[in-house]
Image (cartoon, rainbow, N blue to C red; front, side, top):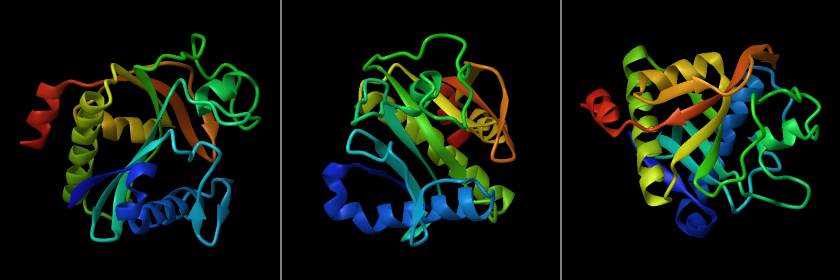
Length: 200
């Protein structure tokens, strides 16, 4: 099991894996959870899947077991910026205006994390391996892309998975119901020593 970083710059090498990631997102969020999200031919995507985003896939070959997307809070594409800010601006009717306790940042060193998932069919031991890889990937992205902090929108259960992977999190807004799950925005900080102890 390994982690691969996918960008639009390396799609020549990772294009097939990127398709597998979108298919895994379709299964996790639409088929398994019934979320009403854009999709076509079994692939889940939205307006934030642009060249400004970076993707992580935890996989063996083309079988994807987990992943996430990160987007700079300075992102802008046509009428979209990033999910939490657009929700706060009232552009996403399925998400509350008060999704964040403070105005959404636009800071090149703060990035949004979204579409976090771990395959539900894995054993507890395998899920732990995926969680550890997710945490180490966050640390690598923070170092490589000069990221100070992450702002994450996810389910409360997924946030618990990230804490178990060694990430420090604190609420960034109130809890709310979306797609049959309790969701919340979180501040994420990278604790490299804690991540190493989890991966050891």
